[in-house]
Amino acid sequence: MVLTALEFLGLVAFAASGALAAVRARLDVFGVIVVGLTTALGGGIIRDVLLGIHPPTTFSNWPYLAVCAATALIVFAFHPQVARLRRAVLLADALGLGVFATAGTTIALNAGATAYAACLIGMTSGIGGGALRDLLLREIPLVLRREIYAVAALAGAVLVAIGHALPLPSAAVTVVAAAVVVTIRLVALWRHWNAPVARPGDTDPL
Image (cartoon, rainbow, N blue to C red; front, side, top):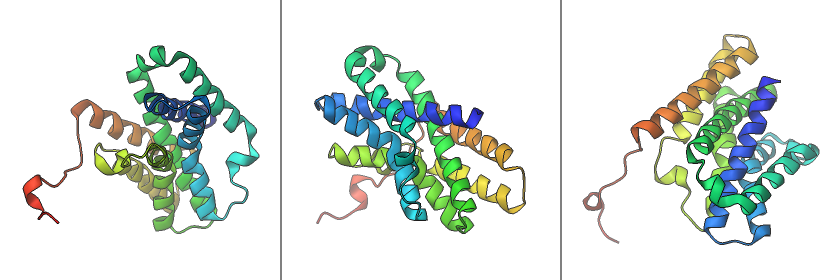
């Protein structure tokens, strides 16, 4: 029940972040809903496709679509008020990242994937929706430009894989790993940690 609640919280956060980005890009209401749905559900769909789960879980559970679409509509209607809740949205986004990355790794391991593949699939589950959002809005994905995001998701995925190999109780490992992801993400935001980028003089012009 706790993991399910966290998963829906993550869906709401991802849908809200996608919808807000679409509002800033001045898309119409349909575009806002599409981008919100893609941001929230894209990572899980990619995970299921990689694991050969057809149809993807999202299409078999209508509450996922309903919650994300409703969130996008609320953001469209009240976007000035939602935009003021930036810290709350970032916290919920971090929770969603932790839950999706660790749950995705667990699902991959249970489906018979190797630890290496499961970690990559789990990381993709966490960051995939945001990357698709940025591509739809014709931007370089945020995860490729700055901020400690994918690294946090990968750290949680690795912890799940280690716990699975030992073996340790799956639920406890997932919760602890998700907490680690959230902690890394929030500390990175607080301390303004970013991955290093090449300086202008480090590369030759084409």
